Amino acid sequence: MGGTDVTDGWDWRQPGGAPAPAGGPGPGQPPQGTAGGTTSPWWSDALADPWRDPYAPAAVVVPAAASDGAGEPEPVTDPDLPTRPGLRQVVLISLITALLAGSLGSALTYALMRGGDVPTLGAQAGQAPALAQRKPESLAGVAERVLPSVVTIRVASLGGISEGSGFVVSTDGHIVTNDHVVADGPGKATVIFNDGSTTPGTVVGQDPESDIAVVKVTRSGLTPVQFGDSDALAVGDPVLAMGSPLSLANTVTAGIVSALDRTMQAGEPGGPTRYYAAIQTDAAVNHGNSGGPLVDGGGRVVGVNSTIKSLVADGQEAGNIGLAFAIPINQAKRVTEDIIGTGKARRTVIGAQVGGTGVTGGGVRLNAVEPAGPAAAAGMRTGDVVLRLNGHPMTDPTDLVALVRKYAPGSVVTVEYRRGSSRQNASVTLAADAK
Image (cartoon, rainbow, N blue to C red; front, side):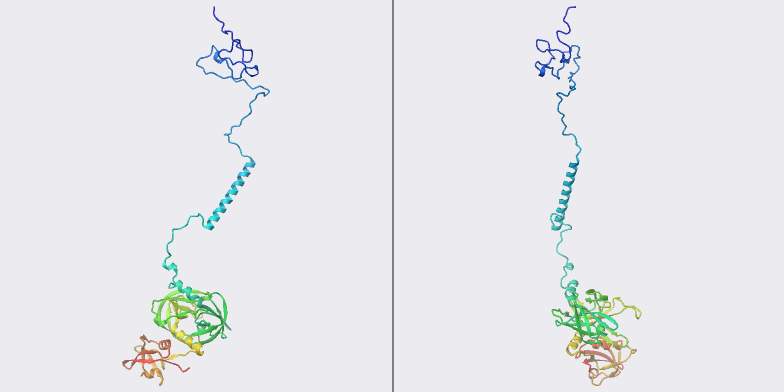
């Protein structure tokens, strides 16, 4: 058949096997003048293939790299691929982390100490409540004001060491305490002040029957207590007891006045009998409180703590059960002034001797009346039965003795008494005894 050869003059050898036909490259042939006289590695005659499927995609044939490595492209590392850190990087990262943690800790510590940017904890507080302000008239304010004047007193004797309390009553060093605190000593005492300092003291004088003693120290800068009026007290008034119970110095307990003019007759066997019309309180008082002050709500001393009642058998240690008794300060102050001024205390008397109990209809019988005494001067006689003194009922002879000694010599009291079947009243001017 006639026609043209299928080769149409083209060389079907692989690229690079023979020079291209003259007349320039045909379709699909590489451009002339390639480097080195070789065919471009990107050339392919696939598009000139007459048997090529026109719907098949063209393919680019890349020849294999030369075995001698000539012309091999430089390897390139993908920067996005994850890399494994080396030892140097691990050490550097750890060091930086430690430095940052230390700096952060120091900054937080500084901020906490300096109150920097640390948030304020709790709600914003307004003015403190009245009870938290510790005003001078509050219990805390009273205690703060009085405690510097309260002392502990220790007395050494053959029987051991006696310890009690006391309080400063003058700037020149006079201290009031109970007689039974210093009674067994040699007239010397050790005084321990509120700040813990100690000073030797000397017993100036004592009155066993009123249970009051005065100790003197040589020390400047002392602050004496303020005296109140024990006659102005009312049942229910708040009071504070201060002292050194069971050797616990600077102890303050609170309570109220439980009763007034409570007759007390105390004393050790073989010793003097003590009489006083006491202030009863439920403030906790224990051994060691003896001689300490009983203070009213204004910070004024109204009594001298002296004794307690307790439900214990003889020989056992007594403790507080809410029944404590104090010598009225009006009586204690008067006795103290007598001791400082004369070395001894005057005793107030009515000028009569009293009998036992068992009087029909109540009252206290006068077994004898001194002819020149206060009772006789008021018209009273032996055998009269005293029913009341200044309104206080008499049920026991101790009541009359204790209540009379509450008043100062020269005081005028009203006595209601019974003579036979009639009742009478008398105004009696009390006197001091002849001692």
